[in-house]
Length: 272
Image 1: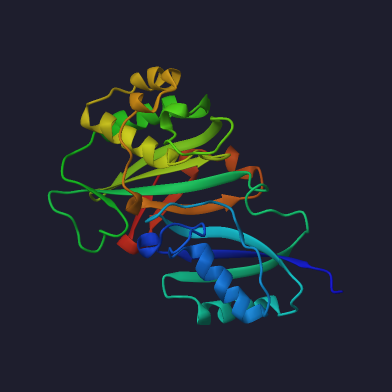
Image 2: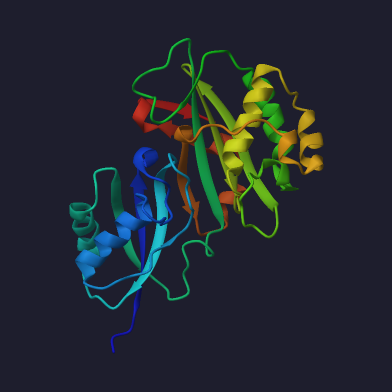
């Protein structure tokens, strides 16, 4: 019997027309499409393990999955073969063999999400699938101050939506940065892991700070409350993208100034 290979894939997808990453009965999902494509190419059923379970409408630039297979297909051919079978809103752009113990989810050290907002009187039709349109100005300096209060190791119960299965709500938010350029505001969140809808709840709370409904100094009170009702609303899914997953520790050492935030679909570059 051939030994199983552990294959890691990196893929991107437009989450607009998906019910999320994870397989669900009678729903179109990224995991479902990828599993079906792998089955056709490899001639065997494989279990696809995802690094993050993005929700309906949430996108990914660099989602990571792994699976075990006895197939001998050359890895340099696998992305092209998969992309010939996958729908146009999913693209696999890297395949590599990894050690047997590698697990896309549990081996991850840092996950990075980016959220884009368009601040303008009227929404751009070019950004509608990838941003949250806000027709009022935001105080970005106040949002940055609030972000600093949220950074670090905390119990993020106030930012966890109902329905999450996490046993502990303590997470280390290594970076929460806010950038602004040309009518666009972007938030980058990097952590050792995120709770259910945590990033969208963080963004919704920062927007309330930007509007003046909340103050930066309210963040400590919100964290201490450990009550979802204490924080701001949940930002809509279309502005969120799973940007990067790091399997080394080095990302935690970065500072906001080290990160250039590029929004490719808007043809702009925002530097944090």
